[in-house]
Image 1 (spheres, rainbow, N blue to C red):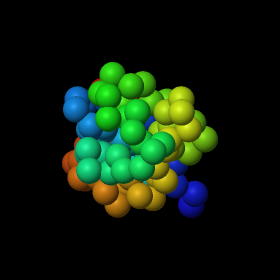
Image 2: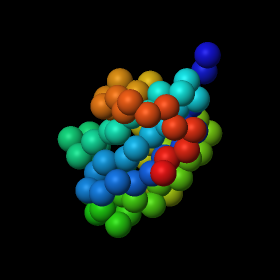
Image 3: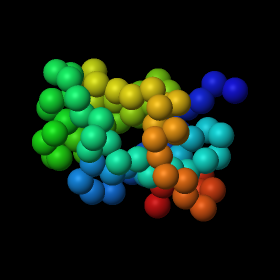
Image 4: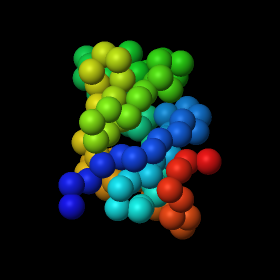
Length: 86
């Protein structure tokens, strides 16, 4: 199966709740992952929360994104198997 982010919700600071097409729900903290020139604008939390789901992952308007496999591995598993982030 091709892994995709199907829903995402900003939780605060650099945390995002993600739902994957596999049914898994994870919370990712990207505060330690904003390394490099493309991720520099994301250090502004107002800009950070402006992500959209594009193609199969979350992406920002400057083109910054993370592979869904990386997000799945990084995330903390949630017990709920929600179809949408509430």
